[in-house]
Image 1: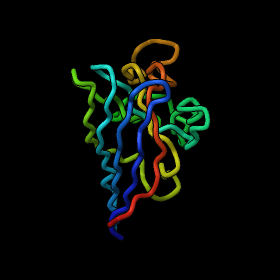
Image 2: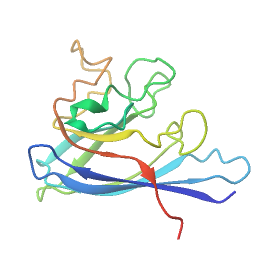
Image 3: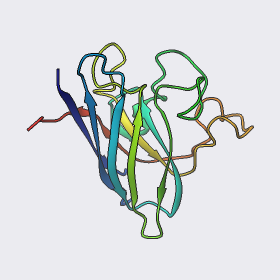
Image 4: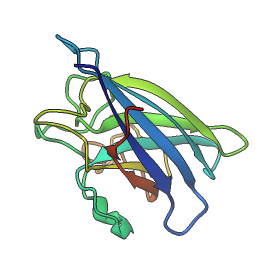
Amino acid sequence: MGTVKAVAIISGTNNNVKGFVHFSQHTAAGGGGGTHVKGRIMGLTPGLHAFHIHALGDTTNGCISTGPHFNPLKKNHGSPTDEERHAGDLGNIVAGSDGVAEISISDKQIPLTGEYSILGRAVVVHADPDDLGRGGHELSKTTGNAGARVGCGIVGLQSSV
């Protein structure tokens, strides 16, 4: 019982994207409140950027080697509020004119414990907006047509102190 915390340090592969994302999940009885995601990512172009959990915590080939979106239930890509979505579909973050995106969301499909834990997986920030599976592009139902991966980090346990 208590709170499980995790962090991902975000870095870009060929750019100056950098930042951090903190995750916290209350594990008290019933614990169905989901995981809170809070962070700050800098060095982005102003506007919307797709924000996802990818299946693999492998950055040996930069953000490309993080694999596809985390999708343990084999669903189509969608919005964080859709019934039909990948667990890792977290929608878009918004970078201001200064290139900084402040993140504060909660999601019930990205637990830090249990069978579908995101620990050891990767957070990925994309160059383009996520069309949330509604864009009509051939990639809409798999990636949200979100473009290149401009930054990523591996989700790891954080001290609770």
